[in-house]
Length: 452
Image (cartoon, rainbow, N blue to C red; front, side):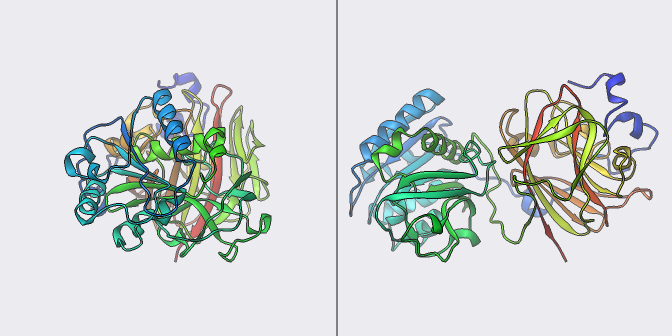
């Protein structure tokens, strides 16, 4: 709900500071790029049904029955129905349209004929979801669409052994619950290609922690992508029966299914060339301005008190793409400030920079995705991409000259151009806000890519 005036008058991003200013003429959302205007394909009809497909034409995993039972239990506990089948005839337009996502559970070999393949392609292009588990990457080698969908084909594997998984994206619904380093036992696949250029890598294997890795130190093991209109999650985990009684793996599987169904949102765009400003282990280069602080634990910066600003003092940025993940606990408030000069006074960011708001409960020009007090986000696009309080969201803030574009979970929701002579986006620092005692907001994985 909106802030009381007495409280709002003493926080960063407040109407007290901005109230004397005349809002710019472009205070309503500017037109988005043509790509953002493109209508989405029709979605499959059933919003809460999942198909589990486990047909094998090659090696058959004895963990398949355990996997089916585990997914059925996840469905019962989380509000979606699960149908399990090994009948390829299920892959027809009428039947597929009943499901929000299809799970390929350790399928192997050629499991669909040409007509069935076409039906599944059209299902994905209409907005359907795909979840690939383990040997789903050992499936349909002669079907190029499927190869692009799964992201990478199986190559080989060593013996079952313990290894360390490094979680790169701790905001995706499939991996947000995981530790940064996750030790577990499984059969670790090597892949014919590295999917990093085409998919968002969520977790990689530390090849120094086990024997038999062949991917030269960059070994993705779980990833996601948007493909031909559909949503894709794949994990190489899940060979063993024990996997399907393992809490962390089951939560990963649930998050992947929710993402594929479209009930949880994430940025699935490939990501290369970013430099970490906060990697979860150190706050070197950062400085607190004003009261309050951020506590570092479990790779996360959590706000304490306020009203202050934790800003990156080490470097001023010019043209750049800034990405970070954030989570609110309940009706909390915070923002990301950009384009302000160095100062130990948090009000300098208010007076000279721009705040990109997090709180979704204010008026449009002061709500999630807005350039606070200046321009609303595209509210419909924002609402369709926003995860609720208690779940992680990801921003990309792309600054080029005086233009600022904002992506929420991979969806562009704002396109703003600075027209205020007293402010400039051409250079400045970035910071995250600790808003007050009643506001509890967390941040992870702050990284930047400098643009030419």
